[in-house]
Length: 350
Image (cartoon, rainbow, N blue to C red; front, side, top):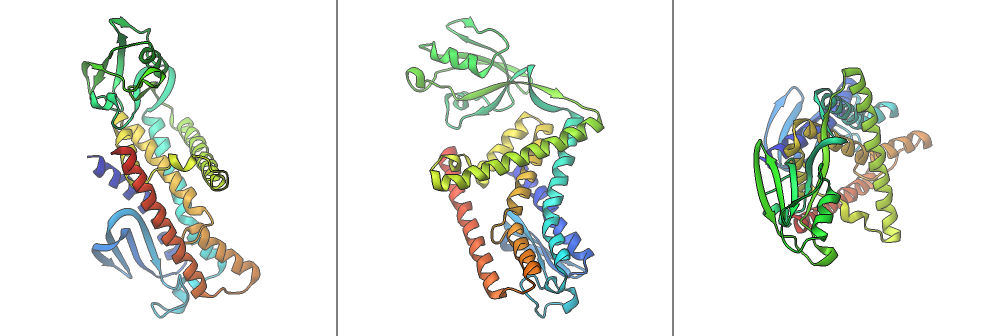
């Protein structure tokens, strides 16, 4: 089920992004040759009008192929090719995907706040928000979304509500198992968990937060959604800044990054907490997609936008062969990064 939910989340965020490119390109009089979800090889396709719609094997991206995006060619009339259009139409096409991802995030956050968003509050229900892979808690059957009713050590129950700090204190002060009573899909269960490690390194591998549903009227939900989208975006920019700085200062920011496998796991955890939390998590993925694509890196929308703007400023065309090589190299680097992150995901999860 996690894989299915993950593919649906990617389908929504990627299709919305690519639809932005597709819509503005069509409105600008450009020929869109292909609208693809996933990375080839191609699984199946169908054609409607002048556009071929394709579903590809690897569901980790998407693309829109516009006639003339790599220079004037014979695929369509010259006046309907990307390269023949003025710089502002090219720029509009390139940023349209990012704009659509931001709008999608605001829409999803608004829906989540309107329905009832699970948020951490002082008076919320103690809920498991994270379970470490391979930890004693996971082995005991605890999952993200379970609510904790009590934690006890040697028959002595901790004060309520239970927090991560309470559990940490109990683990540090106990020599034996920690007894956790929890509710999983309406059923109450009790399990004894034997911490791993010794001394101050003893852990059971879970995080608990007091969670309650925050429901807002539509106008306030929209404002909260816009603020949340902005907050997530600034956090992503800060993380990318730390990542770039880490290249020179050797910090550990890169270790916190996740690839497709890790993202699939996080999507499954979000779905376990509840539908509205999954909506919010999908919104965060959409913001991530927007921020990453607007970065001025070859092969990304931001990298292509830089070329368009430089050509407009200098009033000279760059060699399409040179630009093509740069973007191809950028694409290869991005694929390499994807493989690197995937290997890291597998090591952490398995």
